Amino acid sequence: MNRDHYTYRITWSPEDGEHVGRCLEFPSLSWLAPSPEEALRGIRQVVADVTAEMEAAGEALPVPLSEKRYSGEFRVRIPPDVHRALAMQAAEQGISLNRLASAKLAG
Image (cartoon, rainbow, N blue to C red):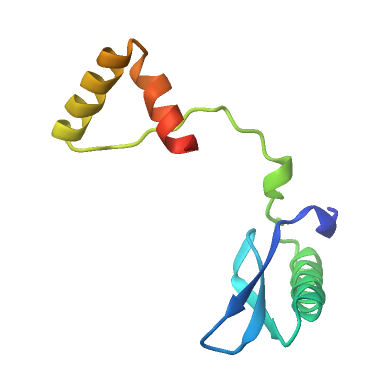
C-alpha cells in the first residue's frame, strides 16, 4: 500500500493557533504544527507509523479514497414535501429529478 495515495488536508485551527494536518482515511488522527509544511510532514509520519503497526498486526489498511471505485449512485432520504417540491421543479425545467438533484449537489 502506498501511503502517498492517502488524502491529506491541512487547515488552520483558530482554537489551537496552529495548522492541523489530517488524513481523511484515518479521521481519528491529526497533527498540530506552526506551519502547513510541518503539519503535513507530521500527519504523514503519524499515518506511516499507524499503518506500519496495522500491517505488523495483520490488520487491513483502509483503501485510499483516490483508489476506490464509485458507482455514481447513492440513496438520500428526504421528507415527502421536499421530494414533491423537487419533482415539481424538475418538471417545470423539463429535466429528470436525478438531473435536478445532481445539479443541486454539484452547485
